[in-house]
Image 1 (cartoon, rainbow, N blue to C red):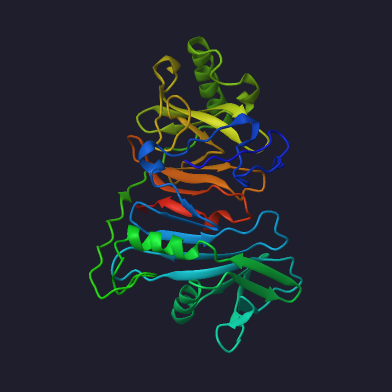
Image 2: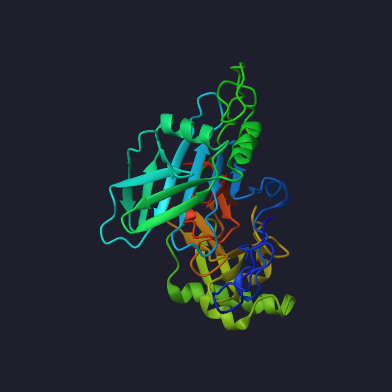
Length: 365
């Protein structure tokens, strides 16, 4: 899996090496956020682009903004698998807007794009402006990327540069993953074949809400009992200094979900999760998450559980601003926690979490 290195406790990136932007988690937290089966599907890097696919072969390719760029700008292309899968191309531009622009002017290697130089409409969400390309403009940009080196995006007072180096290779890789090489629907290497493999079925996970929440005092008591028991078995398993962040929730059949805070860094809190029969800490068993860390696979970073929905989420940050790392979630099924989603970004380049590359998705009930 892609690793990320970060200076412990400061939130600042260390001096760059030959592999810049790959940062480690603060306070020595090393994230092995995917199992061996998922790790094989980690995003691939193609010069200035990255691409990855999820479990149902929906694939994403995106440009990586230059490190320390004054203006963060990037392209993101996502395409579902199957004969009806249509590519969706977005451009994101982050600026310090007094008034967000309604249009963005684009140029390819200095020449107007699209042909004729008409600015493209943009929508704003906070400090991020988005251009959604039409199917026609998407096809034109993919074709132009074969020879063009750089796309520039400008708005009043702001200009962003997007490298196209590696974009064709990234899209060719996507065509290969989706079985489109040599077909009429290929992004890059088109052919006469009209047959494309169907998309795999989307897994369905039925989430169960947990019983009414424990009151704070009862939750702390359950967690304290388990921490004391764990201390007997493995004295160094969890830092006592993090005990104030221990949590517990009621589950069905008089069981309790307990999260023991084991390690705290500048912006990451690692917790170990157990299912414990009520008031019986000696019978507690560690959960094993599909993307869990630790010897038992029961550690998650910056995790939060919502008993109303039965959803458990985590967000391991590669650095304090949260522009790289791994995020995902699980649903309580009444028996265990089933994976519902997983996304990652191994390069710290100002890319928002909602644009990270998805590696797993499901339909929730």
